[in-house]
Each structure stands twice: as structure tokens, then as C-alpha cells.
Length: 255
Picture 1 (cartoon, rainbow, N blue to C red):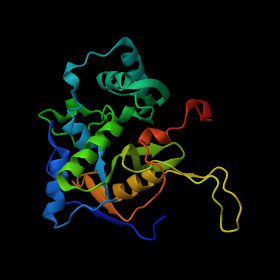
Picture 2: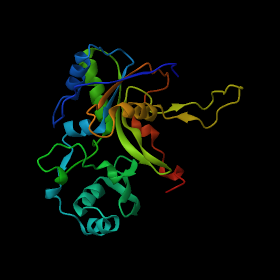
Picture 3: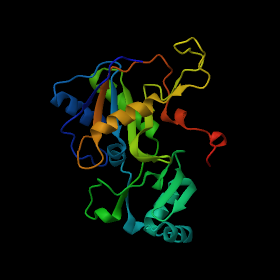
């Protein structure tokens, strides 16, 4: 692990719209502050700008809720049209109570509302518009990684992060939902501790830790800083997508 990390939130990132070129936007933002990308740098991008660029926007006025969605909406006190969208984006409902709907979404992530969100979505009817997660965040991260390599000639890592809650803790934290060009998890089993004892179960979720660090700079509201440059992280572990960090259901003690 490195002795020092540098994190820099890029200023001046414009409002992203469908079909925008994220690599060009990141390139322009880096150039605007007089920086360049070096091999090994990591770019963390907020899920919302990836989803916007990919057109993952839904107008609830076009959604007809199913009977299941209507029934579930009453239980959780939510708009049945939004619940319908959540169900379409989900494999299973994990927990429900008034105001809370926890699902396993189509990506395998356990999260509230399948990541379907109203906030920071530009629209002529904001209350009628929701944003979905990228259809394949790992592919989104890889596409951006390749785009930056083509434009800037640097081999970088890319993380797509999102803010999620945790079952045993209050508050949200950044989570890596898409990863390219770096390990999602570093397997430390077989290494030794300070006293020479073998580590038998230690696996470090480095992409999530980097995603959470970047989230501190991105903020949760009107900060408008969806892109963070991380410099100084190094690892010889194999590169993996974010899906490598998903715990298989048969190993989940709480579902």
C-alpha cells in the first residue's frame, strides 16, 4: 500500500447530457487546471454523470405501474410509478418498510431503490424524472478508461462510484459500482502480519475505499464536483471489475 495519496476534485465539469463524451469532458477539466494524466492515476466519476451520458433517464409520466408495484408502493409509501421502475431494475426485494425499499438490483448490488434517484437530474419536470444506474457500470468504466488513453496517452484506472447506505451504520458512503484498470479487491490471504502470523481471511476492498475517499470531495448535494483525480495508489494485484467484490448469495448470512 502507498504511503501517500493525493485526491483532487476537478472544477468546472459542465452539466452532462445524453450522448456527451465523458472522456472529452474529463480531458477538458484536467487541462483547465493545468494538470495532465500520468500512468497509474485513477479517475473517479460519479454514477450520475455516467448515467446521464448514457441516457438512463426515465419520465415517470410514461410509466404504468403493475399490480405488484401498486401493492408494494402502499407498503413502502412511495410513488407506484417509481416502484415499478425499481422493480424493473431489480432481481428481488430484500427488505421493505414505510419509507424504505431495499432490493437486489440487476447488477447484483443490494441497495435502496435499486439506485433509482430523483436528485440532481435536469428536467422540465424534476419531480417526474428519475435516473437509473448505468446498465453495465464496469463496461462504462472501461469505455472511459479507453477514451482517456486514446486522448491523453496514459494508462489509468477508472472507478464509477455511487453513494449507498449500510445496514449497520448511519449515513451514506461511496461505493465502487464500476471498475476498470485496477483491482476491486486485493487478496491478502497468505501474507503475514507484523508478527509473522499468516493472514487467512483478509481481503481488502480497495476500489470501495478509493470510491469513498473520492466521495468526500464530490459531496452529496449541490457541490457540482463529480470527477476526482486520485494519484499515488499502486498495487500489483490483478485488475478486476467491480463485480469481483460482490458477495455470493450463498455466503450472505443476513439474507
